[in-house]
Amino acid sequence: MSTLYHHPMSAASRFIRLVIGEYAFEVDMIEERPWEKRKAFLTANPAGTLPVFVDDNMRALCGPFVIAEFMDETHGVLQRERRLLAEEPFQRAEIRRLTEWFLLKLEQDVTHPLCRERVYKLQMSTEYGGGAPDSRVLRAARANIRQHMKYVAWLAGSRGWLAGKRMSYADLAAGGAISALDYLGEINWDETPAAKEWYQRLKSRPAFRALLADRVRGVVPVSHYADLDF
Image (cartoon, rainbow, N blue to C red):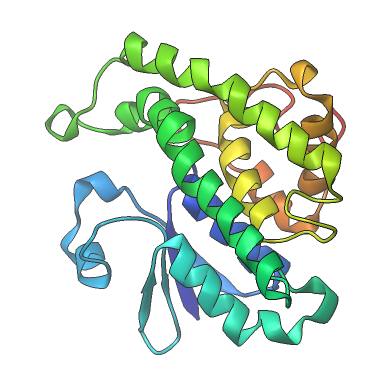
């Protein structure tokens, strides 16, 4: 069986887990702590980043964009209305643009700093950079959340889904990142009702169930995290 190396608070890993769920793949899930730089993991991905998908023939695909493109080419083209990339070139470009926005821009501004300070540092030994959260990093990341959520609300309010009429990789990339932030209770949903309505629809999908069941050692999720109607 294929294997996915992931971390439960990695937005990129969550994105690929949602893709796997939507396309009904059967995979073994292995939680990886990339900062430990395990030799076996670095053999699969010398960059030491997540996620990594290893197929039945032990061939490794590294990174969310590569894995998502592979899954579209091997499975998405057969899905018709359930395909997560559009057929029209400009629409495909918009989906890719937003997927990159949520997995790179939001990751840099908000998701990674908050997850590192509030989660990863708890799991790291001091030799890997573990310790108390840096309040300056937390303040900077939290200052960026509002603008990103306003953008999500604008997209959700002006389109059927974030990139257009159909759900796509853009929604799953956003969902992967935002669900990690929601786990930590970092989002004020009352400020962006259009984003909240979009997220309620997304988290109600069967593919989301595994993410809502996640629990991270030492970090209790916000009380509404697994609620579909919050």
